[in-house]
Length: 216
Image (cartoon, rainbow, N blue to C red; front, side):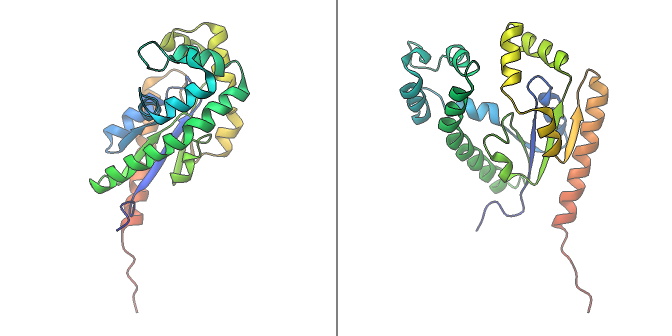
């Protein structure tokens, strides 16, 4: 039996610093199982993994700590300064990421959790959008996002801008999403919109599960 039958995967993505985690928490509260692609990305580069070995082979031992773990700051310094190297990192890591995401989708499905939110900053780049029936993008103004990234990650303004500039532009998110949620400051407004969108998707899911009765 296909364990993915009856599953609806909703992709949540958007600009770095836009505040996806706020939206994700509302969906979780409204009964969605959540797969966090950031946690997946950390899992696939743990010490001793094949993905980490491939990264070290390409980028050198300078991105590996003495204890054999990934030196994230060193790797970030390389890839966010050179788009071609970022693309190479993506080429190495995305197959491992998508494989783990599919595994987690199957686990949720077998547990009867059929409404799944895939929280993925690089949803499109990793082609994980192929798994999704609905896509939501969270957007925010540049200056707001820069401040959030600096506060969240302890970066300089220049480092924050490099991360922002390494992403797809706002128009791409707008043209490839079913829902757009703006998060420019009002937490109550974002929470309210997120509840509304999650309710709409739950209703759509219920409608799809209702068998059609043919009347002769």
